[in-house]
Length: 460
Image 1: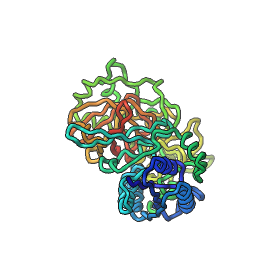
Image 2: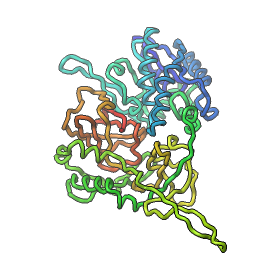
Image 3: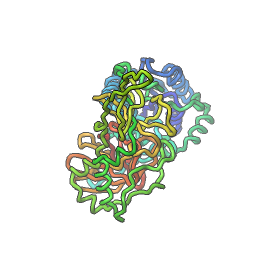
Image 4: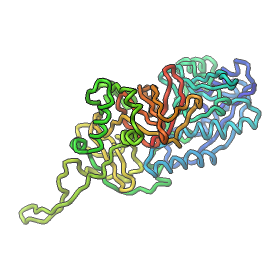
């Protein structure tokens, strides 16, 4: 069997190539260049010339042929343009997921097969298994990587059975320290290289500056939302009431996530135990309402004239609003995403400020103070049917079905207990523990109890 390894110059793909070579396969390496521009990138991060040089040195050390392919046009059209479009519409994309679906296991796979490859291997930390179904068809499974700190199955959540049939993940059963040790013992030039960060094949970027290549800056208001707003907001109260009626114990539902770090949450505030029979009875309209984020366009401000100083000079100020206040300015709502706390440059608060919503049409960024702000947490999300992807098509759900799962809404997030609720036009995910920073445009991914990733979809 002839195998093409996508050699990036990093230690993971290097060890993947080495292991395949040791196993006796006919292996060759191919390095792909996907990006030329440097505008918006931080100097010295993920520069492709150095990556290519190291990759070529690794191939020489292992003793395998080395090839180069330029896929920059495909990458710009199928990944970067998608990024700009999503940010322009107020959504937050995940280009790494698209890069795997559209480039590594599509355009790159096609280029490798033209060179005679039967399979393509990468350095992802995930595992692949297969079995034969009752009809004699081979079914492929993606499982979490053995290393819980490096599992990268999330980034492969949009692959299909055809792509998986051609994919190999040689290091998915290893821990990262083992990979480093193997590389060092073999004297590979990539053994001590740092892991790449930032956008796939673009590198670490100053995201607002990167996006300004196509998105024009435009000043707007930053509005802080007070806790009082949620007491008076009918949608927030309706969601709380509906969810409370779905619990097994009938107790008021917990609406706020317990905080540990940016990637972890804790159940100390109380996980919600929902009744599956009651979930099955929910109609799609109710589920749609549960999945909708709170809207803040009802927070409006009026001015008033007052007299100041000895001369009673007329001045204008904002009238007091119990729901919030204008606390600063920003240079474009498209440059901010839910849960973000850096880049606001607004002081005067005891706790950190977090973005809780953006209004692209009115160019407003809404923020809340503190990790436990109500605007950061949501329990239910929606994936419209057109955005739903089943890796295991044999496990696809039918209308009305309710299924237990473990899910995540971002890379490196520990798996969360949740319910999948399928309806005619959308799949809904209801989490036991409210989730921090559910963001439109990101991918939600779900797994079985044994660590198999069975499907994914773009959050609406």
